[in-house]
Length: 116
Image 1 (cartoon, one colour):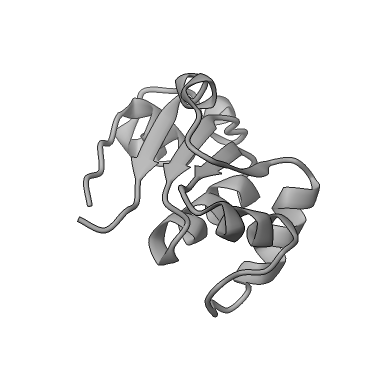
Image 2: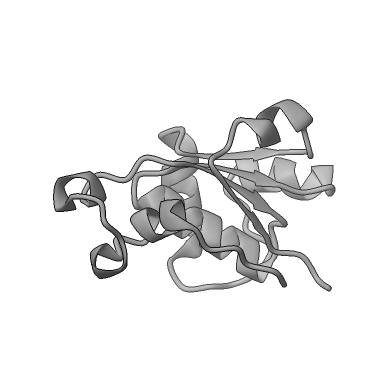
């Protein structure tokens, strides 16, 4: 897995000591985040970022998996994950999509969470 960290990510994670941004800006993150892959790493990451107030789109090539996630069916067990997915999907902060160039170009940060 490859992870690129920039100042935008530091803001998302509220790592104020590592960033020069004001604490007011840090307390209200609202970034557009793309997650490629909805497995154990990607789905948990996306749901947690959405729960922190970010707008997250999770991309996957498995349309059936995306359909199931859209109705709250998580394909594996992680304590509390199903509730996070349902809550954030219903309030619009977590979305699921097939790979889509237009949507991918609209995000501020992309995490690639696929098997390597």
